[in-house]
Structures are given as structure tokens and as C-alpha cells.
Length: 334
Ligand SMILES: [Zn+2]
Image 1 (cartoon, rainbow, N blue to C red):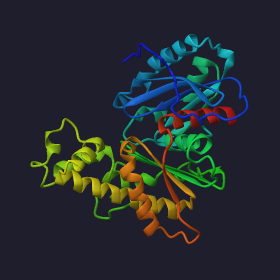
Image 2: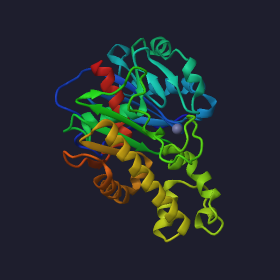
Image 3: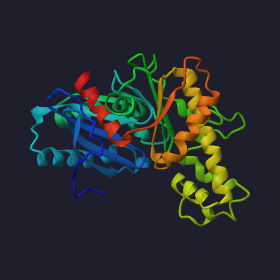
Image 4: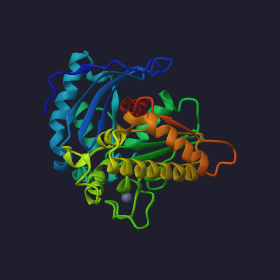
């Protein structure tokens, strides 16, 4: 749907933004499976943001006209000329070649993007440069520069939502690897060798066992489904599961507890792989952060091999803003 109102961004996070003027404006896009968030960033602050429905199964190409017109409306509303645009930063799911500015592989969403010349589109439309990066990396950059990772050089992010994403900063460097997939496939660590086949081809991945795209199927396969209050819900997501578990529903409790253990195992794996000082967790499930964070902290304290001390488990400060700010950071700093 075409958004009729572009909201001026009011941050609930007074600490975002850093000292010093950067100058210019970055156009930022956070391409998600259900929503595409669009915004403008100046001086490391989000000036305005809006979101449009993604319909990702139809591909990205069909969304380009509405993306263009929405951004142009924003630029007009805030009286920003084309020569003030420093670049476009895109946060994108999948494996992203940030040097060639290409999406190399994407899991079941926006399949057409692999063939697209995004730099060409950006250049034709706004006569500026593109920075594109994996969405978990963009969110991590945002949290590392402006959020919960601000005081650290070794930070890992895990995002839990439709899928499970991850990314790592090691000794102050964003981990990308030879094929741009280092650090960002934590959602595809095996946590169940007897598990289901994942979209990625692996068996029993973190996100096959405990993320929104598969949780409904897991619930419906359970013998207790018919007698569970979850069977009466329109959809099964983590909000419903945590709420029903709090009300004592047996299946919801079982699903919640399994997911907590899967995410904890993923956290231990991420700690063993990337040696962080802090592990930040973001995504839709953080509505239940009061329950999730202490649980994962206890599990990682017990099970991670870190003789130097304990890794701090933190809820992301503002994961939605983080991806946009991270994409803008790449525009201003590359
Ligand atoms: Zn997988």
C-alpha cells in the first residue's frame, strides 16, 4: 500500500547520534520479508521513516516504483535537493557482496534481487552511490556505533524473528569473510541433528527449530495442538506463544521452553565462534525480553567456555532504528 503519511521520526533513544556534523543526507532502506522500511538520515539521526508492505514473494522489482515515489516524497517534504544526497544504504536479508553491491543468495524472499543491478537503479534514480549490506550486519553496526555495543570492540548480534540472523564485530572490524558469509549464518548453526531440513539445505538449524517461519508447523505437529488455546488463534507467533504460556497453556509452555533452549544454544555457539564481550539480542521476540534475556544469560553463564569472564547478554536498544542507522553509517564512512 502507498503510505499516505510520512512520520517525522521521534526517537525513543536519546543516545542515538554522535558528536560532530557529518553533513548531507543518506537515503536508507531496510528490506524485510513483510515490510520495507524507508527513511532519511542526517548527522547519524533518523530524520523521517515510513514503511510499505513488501509482498516479498512477488520479488523486489515490483516494489521499486513505490519505493522511489515514497523516497521522493520524503525528500520533497524535508526540502532535500539531490545534490545533498550522500548515498543510499540498503539493509538486505541474505548473503550480500558489499564490494560488488550484489545480493549473492537469498532464502525464499525477493528471489529476483540476485539478478538485479541495484547500483544501476540507484544511479539512474538519484544519481548517487549505493552501499548494501546484510541486514543483521547493518543492525549490528547500528547497535555497535549508537546502541548497546557502543562501549565494546567485540560484539555479536543475534536477531530473532521471521528467521534468525547474526553478525559479529571482532577487534573493531566487521566480520565479512572471503565469501561475505562469515558471522551472518548463526541462524543456520545446527542445534538438532534429527531436525527438519531447512530452506538453506542444512538439518535442524536454529531457525528451523525456533523462528516464526516454522513455529506454526511445529505447533500443529504436536499431539497437544487440538487441546491447546493456540489452535484457536488466527496465527501462531511468539507473541501468542509467550502470552498463552503465561496463562498456563501446556503446548505454549513446551514451545516457549524449547525455543528458549534453542536460542541459548545458538548464543553459546556464537560465543564459541566469535569471542564477544557482549551478545546483543534483537527482533520481534524482544517484546518478551524480560523473560528471554535473563534465561539466555543464565544458560550462557553455565555453558559457554569463557575462562576470561562472562559474556554480557543485552537486549538491543532499538533494533529497527539500528538497521537504518547502520546502513547510513556505511554511506557516510565508506
Ligand atoms: Zn538453515
